Image 1 (cartoon, rainbow, N blue to C red):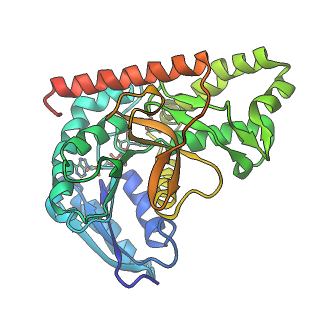
Image 2 (image 1 turned 135 degrees about the horizontal axis):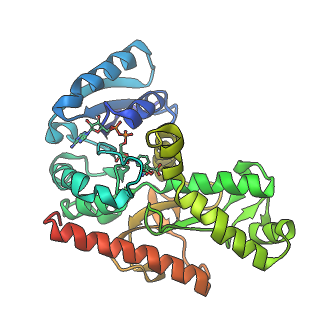
Image 3 (image 1 turned 90 degrees about the vertical axis):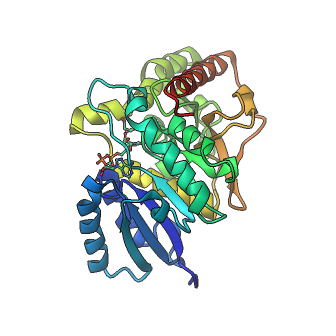
Length: 336
Ligand code: NAD
Ligand code: LMR
C-alpha cells in the first residue's frame, strides 16, 4: 500500500463523466489496489453542489483506498499538488454538431487550467484532456504550462481505440481481449483514422481474417471504408442520437484505461493516445495527435517504424490537416 496518497484532480466532477469516473477511481480501478487516492473535484460555481453531492456519496461508499475528497471552484487550489489531472469539465456537443464546433465554447477553459497546472501541480503531473475538442484543448493547456514537459499533456482517443476493438471483435469473431495493435491516428473527430493494417486477432492478421470472411482484399478495403472507419469515427454521434446525450460510462472507462496504462505500463501490444507530436510519421511537431503508443517506465512512447500505405498516409494527412486548422482557429480566438 502506498504511504502517500496520489492526488487526482477531476475537472467537471459534478457532470456526467465525472460521476462515472469518481467511484471507479476511488475503488482502485485506475491506479491499482495498492494506491491510496486523494480526490480534488473542480467545478464552476453552478456545478459545485453536484460535486459536493458526489463527494458525500464517495464518503458513504467507505472506499478503503480513498484518503480524502475536496471540492473546489478555484483551479489553483484544485491543481495544487496534483499528480494526475483529468480535464473533463467542458460542454458536450448535441445532435448536429461536430466536436470542433465546441472550440469557441470550451477552448477558453484550458488556458487558465494549463497555467494553474504549471504553477501548482506536482512535478510528476500527468494530464489527460477529455473535454472536447480534446486534442486542441490539450494543445492549449500545454501551451500555457511552459514548465511542465510537453509529454505530460495528452488527449483521450482511447475511447475510439476501444470502439475499434469492439467493432473488430464482432467482425472477426474473436474475443475483444485478444485483438491487438489497432491504431487511432489523428484527431478525436470524424476525420480520425482507425487503422487495422497491423492488427492481430488471437495472433492472426486481422486484414487476412477479414479478407477470408469478406471475399478478398478489395472487399475488405470496401468494408473498412464504408463501414468500419465511419462507424468508429462517428460513434460519438451515434451514441448522441440513440441516447439523447453524449457517451458517459464508456468515456469514463476509456479515461481509466488511458491513465492506468500510462502509469502502470502497457502489457499486450500498443494502444492509442493523443500525445504532443515529436514529428513522428510526418505529423508536425507540437500538434496533439493520436498515435500508436506504448507506455514504458511511466512514459508514452510512439511505436516507430510502422509501414503506411498511400491510403493510410492520405487518411492521416487529412486528420492532421484538421488539427492544423483547429490550431489556426484557436490562434485567431487568442487562445494560444
Ligand atoms: P456534463 O455537461 O455532464 O459535465 C461537464 C461538467 O463540467 C459540468 O458539471 C460543468 O459544470 C463542468 N465545467 C464546465 N466548465 C468547467 C470549468 N471551467 N472547470 C470545471 N468544470 C467545468 O458533460 P460530460 O458528459 O461529463 O462531458 C464532458 C466533456 O467530455 C464534453 O466536452 C464531452 O464532449 C467530452 N467527451 C469527450 C470524450 C472523449 O473521448 N474525448 C468522450 C465523451 C465526452
Ligand atoms: C464521444 O466520442 O463519444 C465524445 O467525444 C462525445 C462526442 O461529442 O462525440
